[in-house]
Picture: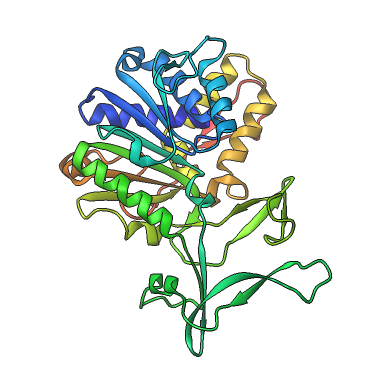
Length: 345
């Protein structure tokens, strides 16, 4: 349901822009390719002719992940391992890239789902002497020589990243995220397209660096290399890094985005089609409930400023400005137990 809602949203906004072609989807950090597969399947059902003018560009550095993506997107097709001759099961060519730099510069739909939260951060602490960077050192006094945090004795070169008007005593900054988003925004301005970003984060600078191993939170410095490291995306910082000719929308919550994109209708369709009721309701709750992913996950969209006249009349679905609209989401009534689910507003 998540990927289908994103597919519908991308199609709708592309059609609103006049359906320019050729079209390329660029995904940063596509994981196993599951999300892109769901998006393409949705497009193939709603607008199959789109696939004839579509190419896929996956920014992925891991050879193992590339193989997983190829298996997901190509299925049983005997597709060439050649980067320029791989065809997806939907007919669109797939190209892999080590970085955004090698992605062709043309009209693009950029997608970044849980990408920016995995990029490296700098942590800073405000002291009486000014800002100091939090660094990682080896505790030579411990028997196992464990890693530990230490404060830099003096300002490091990275301290120039700290803005003059920061009010908190600890902040995290991801300069790489700012650079990548700036590159995307400049491409949108020059060549057209849009970007959709979905990630954990907020508009507040905060201490969020953490690690997860086997679905449990652990200390980030314990057993390095054995856990997933993450830090919430600072959307306020990212909003300052885009081109001046690019429009920023959001962040809005995942719950609001998915409800605006028709997840309730999709739930009804699946249940009427005989899908397992418990799994559908559980998935809906996981995606939209405030105590799960509904509030913590945020969405942001970017468009060239040339779209402003259209967006004044018809803004991007779910986005009506820099802040989330104060309207009630349409909810799926999961209190019923019969297969005939009802929707309430």
